[in-house]
Length: 484
Ligand code: ADP
Ligand code: ZN
Ligand code: MG
Image (cartoon, rainbow, N blue to C red; front, side):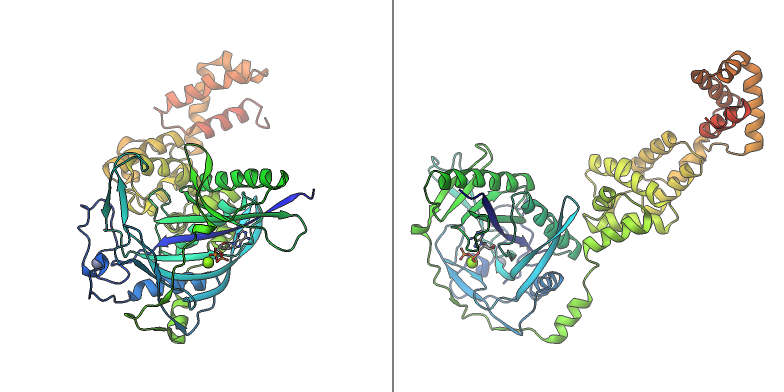
């Protein structure tokens, strides 16, 4: 039997970072509020309440679509997608069916440093549903509680073409998409909290066959890792079905993190007929070419290009450049440090190392770092110039971060400035050699470990101010081992 090949296409839902909901004035932020407190007649679906289109949501969707290279038809409309579920008070979701805001783009992403491209079918706009809280286990509990704070939150759907060919590509595609949304400032990228959600469609076919096989839709993955794991599970499951002479059934399956398996939720026979029809309470959308061009002009530098640029301009490693460009605020901080005169590679190391650790511990975003980029840059410059040791620098950064003071001021106050003045250093080196003639002789005759006490003596003579790197270099030169 021919080897089987996977065909995968992702459908991604992203909540938009608008101030208000999609069709009413309620706040779009819904986490941590008392249940059903962030609602109004419109998002509660009360009879007679009329929706009004959120202009910012439309603009964010168009910007995303443009960044994905989609075209924006001049005419678009909303439709009702009818189905019953307790988290959907109107009995229908306002979505877009046959005339979406955008069509036909592509997303570039990387797998093991190799550039790939995946087609984007469409990017359209809809509204989120409420949330259900199940008392205990979902299948055994006697009731569920409905919270409609999330109902009506703007939701953008990005439908990908079935262009992916292995489970490993899926998280990389999703990473690139998430990165793009973050750089556009339209979504917060939080998969755990569900503001970014992904459904994966997967089928298998004999390699070389043109037609696609029967697809299965998998839901409920809330991390990159579970997305890949769910798809790998499906490859194994579907392969086993096909190889034993059976046929894959079209169905929706849910990923169970506990079982590390997908579980059937509903089959095609139960597939819903959504009875789409045009939303009669909303006017059609006419998107002017002026607006499209205005939005196009507001697009940020594509994240992959930004990554390559930072890597090449500043001699960063691929991994470093990728980490610095995952989120725009990191790239901004880094570039601000470089603009303040920090050597780029050192700047990247300090930002991704000590600073990021401090931010993480304090649960602070880098944008809110008590040590701004220019101040960390000043510290990094001193360390790089040998005026402060790396160890002192890290201690000072931690303290400046904790108390909100200038690292450079702390360095001065503590007398942490290292002496790198060669003449002064030469005098201390002479003194150290006089004090420890045996160590000096040992080092001269090849015992590397004898250098330590000599450097220590230089540091002591200087009252701790001597730059240790410079001290060892001068000692090596003086003792005739400058080359080693
Ligand atoms: P549906 O009619 O079930 O909504 P669509 O054709 O609209 O199916 O596609 C929905 C998603 O499924 C898209 O992301 C698409 O890339 C993907 N998809 C479609 N056909 C297949 C297939 N045979 N195998 C894998 N993914 C597929
Ligand atoms: Zn409302
Ligand atoms: Mg579809």
